[in-house]
Image 1 (cartoon, each protein chain N blue to C red):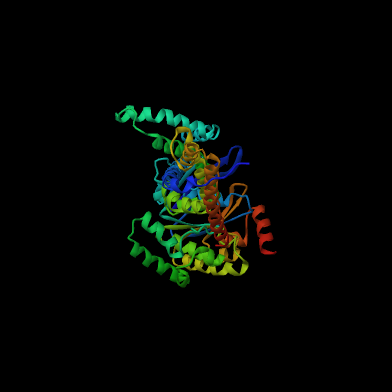
Image 2 (tube, rainbow over the protein chains, first blue to last red; image 1 turned 90 degrees about the vertical axis):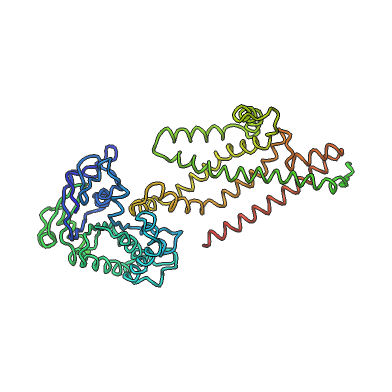
Length: 242
Length: 226
């Protein structure tokens, strides 16, 4: 589904990603973790071309992301993405947040789009909020809407960029629950997150990054049981024992 | 001590009213055209296509570095000739109003584009990323997501600029066009009552602009609490 081969990226002299290579198969849930500044967010933003990269290759569902001839908008409409700061459109009601791209990008008729929007709101437990504006919802609710908005496009896979980092602790679980459910339904997912409990429960594989490199790429059992690199051992020790 | 005599004003009211209509016509046309052209300039300025961004920067810097009254005179002198030769209009057609509107609109667009550029930059970059991630093209993301938010933040500034523009329309007197200020001047000159007429005109400008700026402030406060 997603295949990365020796992806490298730099801002001027600063190397952000170095030779990142990995594979995500259909139905897999990949958790990407690592210290801040290690390039995790940049890596998943490269998958849908939000961040350009200078060398290497990323193929999503048979389409090369870095190829200048690729219609990036079309590709992105098939890849769902959820951001750290939700990024709902604040000038639109919740239901319009869920329909606008369906109508303007996919060309669905507005009635169908609304129906689909309501169904997805139901699914994340927020149907009663449909007519409100994003500013009137809590962070956890906004993030659930953002997930529903991404799902409204019927994506072939989902990218999550630290979806719970901006949330109050008591709201993290409501978002993780939605993500867990999604994973159990077989959605292909790539999640940048520090939620190791989530990783233990649903990840098929864990990717650990440090200084722009993929240091570990292993099954969760191997990663949590016996991380090979010293850097990953330190990281796990810190994150699990605080 | 000057003896005030206001008697020439009542009879002149219809003429002054016509002048006010001209002032408002220039203001409204220049605001509408200035915002449209200013938006395009702002988008060019922010564009990654270098020639477009240079053009916009040059345009804005040029118009912000010359006096408005000079721009108006240029247009007063050039536009009629240009239109005459372009559309074969008969010589001497009165195009003072058209050239005044064109001059104001092109001049104000430079100022509007800076307001709009700041407005666009005030919308978080994440909004553009989110719109793109949903498959929107650049122009869809701008039109549906970024610009509506930018304009909402900018409304008070755009209106304030409109009020300044309304005051500046009095500069069209250089082309002897009878806008409100020009009309008042003409009546005063004719009746030897220039002081009274100019005081009256000043009072009218003050009342209109002060009221308008109060409305803007009211709107601004509402925006803040929303």
